[in-house]
Image 1 (cartoon, rainbow, N blue to C red):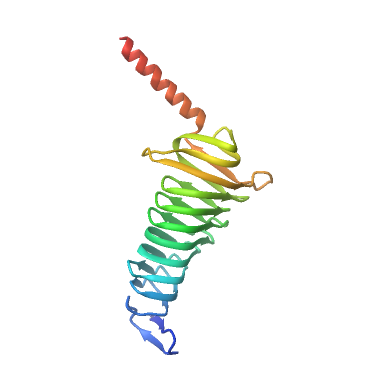
Image 2 (image 1 turned 180 degrees about the horizontal axis):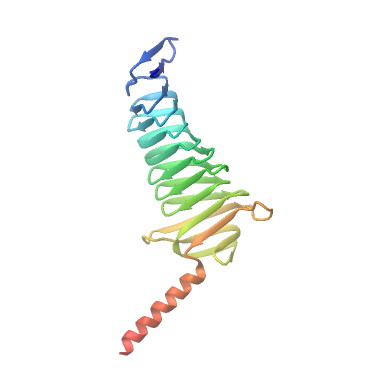
Amino acid sequence: MKRTALILTVGVGLVLVGVLTGESRGNFILWDGQQMTVNTTHSEGSLYDTSRAFIVPGGYVTGLYARDCSTVNICGGSAGTLIAYNASTLNILSGSVYYLYTWGSGSVVNISGGSVDHLDVLADNGTANIYGGWVDGLFTSGVVDVFGGSVYTLCAYPGSVVTFHGRNFDVRGGLWWDGNRVLGTGLLTGEWMDGTPCAVNIHVNESRDEYKATILVVPEPATLALLTLGGLLAFRRRRCK
């Protein structure tokens, strides 16, 4: 039997079952590949079975929960708490999210714009890819790849693997290198591949037990030095001919 969208209105105790529209307020549930454009305020929403929600300008959801391979796209709207469970995907293109979580195997967060106050990438194969935007606090025990944007504070807990993809990396304060691995706590600086600067305050770097955190930079500092030296030598050879 085909399940219908469920709307629960706020404050009047009335339950409406039928077609889901972006103008409805209150709680909503999406099933079986349904889609919804959210352009007003909602208290809570849940997505199941490959359903999709698009949060656009004017749209706000206090709590939004994506399950069963469903997808949430933040495209100028905002959410208070946004959680991806079991193989669901959260795409932050613009707009804002206060609390953003991955929870469960295969859950993914992709951030290319907008702002996130608190990004929590939990274990159990949760992953995050950051291409742009602003992340105020990144707290992880999962896998994170950072290619651009701004990450202000990083707390890497046991089991996490965080990789920064850029160049000209340097360590300050209490950080030091072990190959391309960053140990200790302090300030990591450098540039993304497009030349924009990056600066990350590494506040927690749990590297002492069996399931230690791993913070990496790509390419590694030694490789960068060799590439720079090779370029200089080639330049000198060209000038001498």
